[in-house]
Length: 349
Length: 168
Image (cartoon, rainbow over all chains, first blue to last red; front, side, top):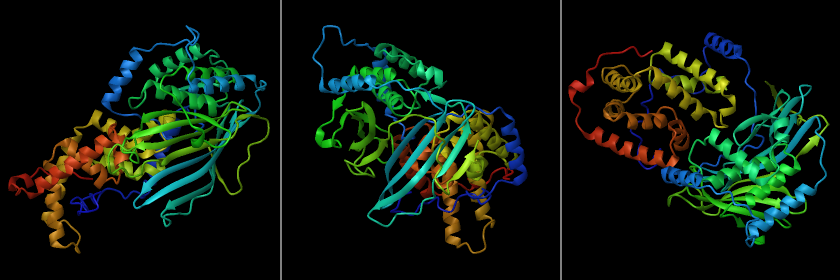
């Protein structure tokens, strides 16, 4: 609330409202949970990578997005062979590299690991949460999916003083075979493995998914492709051919920028795109959305978002803040058992 | 999810209906969440409140109830239904604020109570209402100004007389 004047509504919350941490009436709880759990359990799919959603903004953006969708032109790079931009060169090289990797056999688990850094403002502090996530997505009914969150989590603050103790890692598990979410559509592994391997076909397929799964807020089409590509390249067990097609499809998007070496970790390449981002921290300002690639393997290694221009002058975070940053370890098929850190709580669904 | 959010959801629905109905709405909200588990975002509470809000709007003349509740609470404060250690001046202030809240438009009342009564941040409240945080911030800023204005206008005595409704 407003810090400078007394809130006139302070103390008006009705006394008969339960306090936020009051427990539910045990009888009521038992009855509710009985009814709920009597329903068939829905397929539980997790976005393998948790990240802030891309929610670009406003009715103006809605109109713009509609105009873009209406005017979509699938540009085939081979018509007249236009000069390639440097972003295209980066992406096409990554496509060639990732495609040349040896095919891998499906194993017991699709294994992913990543670290996430999220920055936000809490009162007078800018706090950064750094935590790891590691998941084993089961390929069959014989194994359970296991997902571990909160690994080696730390909370730092600037200025120092708002650090707090964080609960240790926790794990969740549920029955396999895992289903995967691609562009808002949930599908079994065999459908993921059968995703298009040609950029034009992949683009058409994604456009169909976008139509079936409208975003909660208007999003520019380019931003939706980038969002879908992030999943295809980082967390879902796509084939090398589908990953290559993803890079080639991105290469056809307009407006992508090649990142300068000075912005990048040594030995990596990257592409970036400016977009509106809905959040309190940016006051719905403009951010730079970046995908960073290891050119030796063609793997996506990092994804980050940097505040370029706050929506209002009094945005909670300064220009240049890294709003979030994710580093991905190479994902792949493994036959070994999941490893849950000692002391982690395990919830089974 | 149930244990973590039950009481805050119940508090939210109690703003719009009586206890028995509120409990039913909360049940239904969790049932919907179970069916749509894939849709539940990481920040669960605003999503759950948004679902409860839809259920309420489909089934109840919700805003009328919230307005009447504000009037009732205001009247209750002025007629002695309050804690013994309350300072009279504060009681009058709160009663005035509640009466002013009752006089605002439904959208203003909703925006202000999401924050003051349900403890949501601007971003969370925006998620409940399905608008951008910026839109919500502007909306709540204007609502606060109107609340201040309504608090400075002398009350019409008849506005404090209302048909008592069951609160719980």
